[in-house]
Length: 539
Image (tube, rainbow, N blue to C red):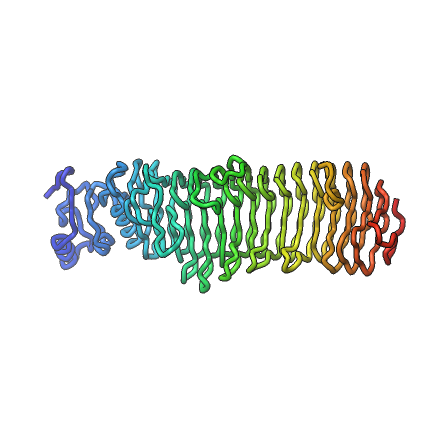
């Protein structure tokens, strides 16, 4: 019997199971054929996966990979959640494959669940939009491995100002937990009431996440949140590559970030992305910290983080923030226009120290307080960066509990700075080979604010060598305590103040040799003009 195309509605039940049973007992195919199911020969028969899952087939003229087969309409009015979930479940239950959403707008009024099955699934949009309706939770929750979303647009329906946050977690349009091999490719997140994407470790852990060439625009909360807050599991191997993050729109919190990595998360690569905003102090028009790594949780700290070749402009606060991260490399980024603190800012969080931080070959321009500002950091290398048109260039401080330590500041170029170019309050520090041109341009201020290099001793040894100073005030200002201070081979030209100025300096031994500085050797009142040590061959 042939079923007319306008009446191809088929609810799986006893008739279908009977037809399949008859075929099996007769030695024929185990799948229901068009004849046995009462479907036209030019249609797609019911599959074993559909029988097993128990879904409702609405259109037999469409293959199992098309959401319209299960009743999806794509008109932005009808709730298509169940149809999309059915298509994913059937594909999972077979050998895997692609679930296609033809052009249209698919309203999502409840969370689409992908709970199980190991066959890989791709949810492929062909000019298709998932429209968040009145969903009490994310549009899509993924808890199974091997899931890909490609070429989909996610947006909120008009009038939707918030979505639910099940289990006390931050709400997001897409939530993935405890799954591995998750890929998002060329997806667009826009006009969302809260976060775009939340990826959690959960009890089983999660790994191998790729977010490629996606766009995030007009979100009211963090665009991508990597959350490793389960003490028994971790999130590993995440790559965010070639994405665009436009400024948030009226965010629900001042803590809105483009990317936030927190807890037990490791092996993260954030590469070649573009971030933009209006560059004002108004958090409604820019990201708080465009990329934040760490959050002070006692569960664990992010580690093995690579942030490279990104362009960050117009943020509302810092470009890149580190708050208790380990083994971090920040290289080749362009960061401009922080109106508050710094292009790269690493504050202390009270739980974890920043450790083993490399900051290299970045361009940091027009950032308010400094190009780079580190606190409470154990092990740092700041090398080969270009820093221009900021208040200060590089600042390394302690956080009041433990000093920053074991650091190198080398081969950086610093230009047109309003105060001190390099401010180093760190133990076991080496400052070498930096080119400093045009600094302490603000009139007034104390001596510490008018140095090419300010060394604030916290004990231990320090070396200042091979640096060049031009068009500034003092060359090197030293204050605090060092067990050993070495300064050699520095060149200074056009200095308005002292080549070397000691202020309340305490040191067991200091060595100043082979420097050429146009200022004089200066010292504060009450200090001996020649502390114990060597002063030789200086001009």
